[in-house]
Image (cartoon, rainbow, N blue to C red; front, side, top):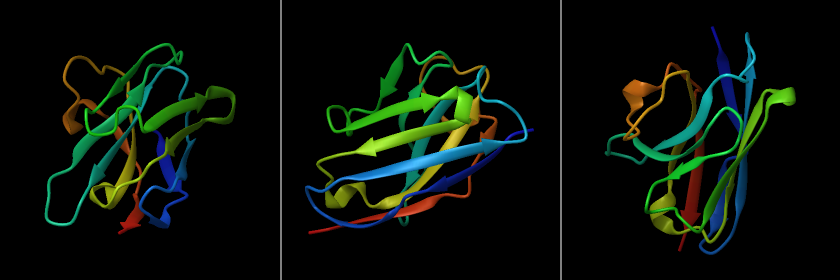
Length: 124
């Protein structure tokens, strides 16, 4: 079992930046694909970005390509989400997720473990 805890959310002006962290416990994340989803008020949870176990490949949602980057430090059991050029439409609760058999189109069902979420609010 893996427990995931996100941090780093907050309020930021449009055009600003935030860096989210996700710390895992209970097991190492070295064999997992690690990713981020988000859920805006009244909407379904949607995929944002993920990275393979060795950090070699990333998969982006079109809405964040060129603005968001993901990185991981397996020795620290931590994954990061760097968000730049933030827009009001990025406002959502952001969730960290881990999966050991992630393939194809990224949907929530592919991920085995989830964090509690951290709120990101981008003002106009």
